[in-house]
Length: 267
Ligand code: F6R
Image (cartoon, rainbow, N blue to C red; front, top):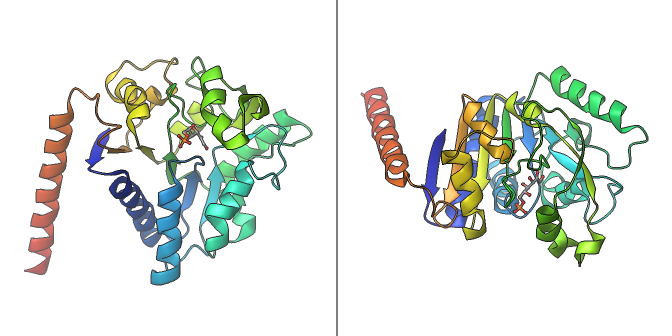
């Protein structure tokens, strides 16, 4: 895992957006895995700005979102489809038929989940998966105890997640109890994962994810098994990491190497 710590949440968000933008520049037909929630908001604002002001082109990009609440139609203001339209898709030139969010009102969830997995494979797999993390260590809605090999399916939300998300719904009793979510195994199949965490309330989950054992009790810890993961943090989310100095050292060496390579390329 590469752990990159930025002084502020804003700088961390910009760094995450930069990584996604570079992926699209290198690979215009990139398949992106996307997340919702508070964490990616600044990332999406920056991607929209780059499209508007710098012409970052999404016309060939395909997207797959991690999850959706069961029972909410895409027109519901708290649905993740609505969130994506509002905060990202309508600001880009991405083709609507290339954006995928699980359907919270599917008639047959087993079939829908199988078809979601199939669509990901048919698109060639996910090149870069953006992830947030829950205070209970979940990625997507893979709550503690989820199988680390799980695929897209319906999951019951944990009490902690319902409490965390009550702010969007105006009360805990309004939060849906279930979600359709990519599995941990689905996420691990992505070619690269980018985990972004901001704020002190994520510090414990990040410590457990990066420095704890791999365990289904903290599903984000499964990312330790992936060969290409970048964890981007602000200071507050990094505050409980024991090996902080080492992560900074690795980044300094990387930067020196990049500078040396750029210097050689110029000569
Ligand atoms: C959302 C998702 C969740 C969130 C996590 C953090 O699509 O998959 O795992 O990333 O619950 O949410 P925020 O960013 O609101 O703290």
